[in-house]
Length: 371
Ligand code: GLA
Image 1 (cartoon, rainbow, N blue to C red):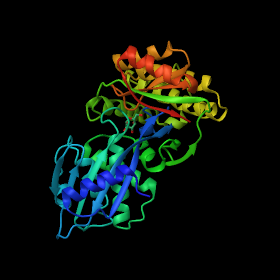
Image 2 (tube, rainbow, N blue to C red):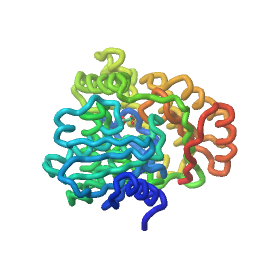
Image 3 (cartoon, rainbow, N blue to C red):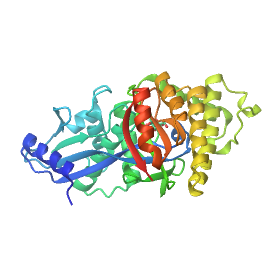
Image 4 (cartoon, rainbow, N blue to C red):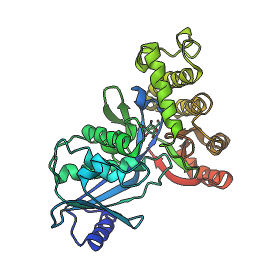
């Protein structure tokens, strides 16, 4: 069945390109419940796919070559030869990388893709840490997978999109965002193992809701801070000669004393966060919102004070959330330096919570999800 937003995008596509879409696809954004800044170290993460989507329409025009892309939200368009794009990509920073990048990553399977007209729209706020770029990438590659009959499975789609993000968008991200977009349906919580690249879904805690609040502070992951954290973690584990999974929780352990301070902070955060993820899976299985809330709070503390990837506004929303009745816990979510805060709230109190925190902290309510 076609959804109304698909129909809107299909209409825009027809009026812009004059051709009827051959494929329509969509992928969700995500909010990460817990497991922050550990996907790139082979950790375990718990992203929740949200019902905010990126949508893509693709048609096969009657011309010899080339790809035309229309960003319907922005009213902007580009035309490009794919081989030329892949060999001489423009610098990072333009939206076209999220569309052309993933397609360039299938040139090994389809060296001469047919001409295509592509439109896309995205209702996930950009820069809010809700993974809008990964959702666009995955929706694009899903559509191309169908169009060219490539038989890529969801993990292969996610991995190719991650490579596109590295190579063309210039962001050295882990696999969490693309995996959540490719593997989970909106509303599903995913347990994703970034060592084996495998995932399964798990039900949430009855009677509690996840509320997502946008601090409206915008980050740019391409900026150096994310890469610095990732590099520090990589150097730490290389220097220790062990992977994240092989190190016991040991913030004051002598095993970390050989590291520089940034490496030690990165390792310390990662080791403790991985343990919190394991505990969070137990808390969810045992339907224990109080325990899960404490783990969220501890995750925020580690991200803010040890890894230092939060910011004043996000910390302020976090602290304010603690003082409102019905809140089990809260934390920043996503890459950091702005973006969103999620709160785990008693479902019966979520409307009162949302009204109070948006009034007091001047943040924007993105969604409430009962799970
Ligand atoms: C961004 C990256 C992810 C992950 C998070 C932090 O969203 O794209 O791969 O590293 O930051 O957990």
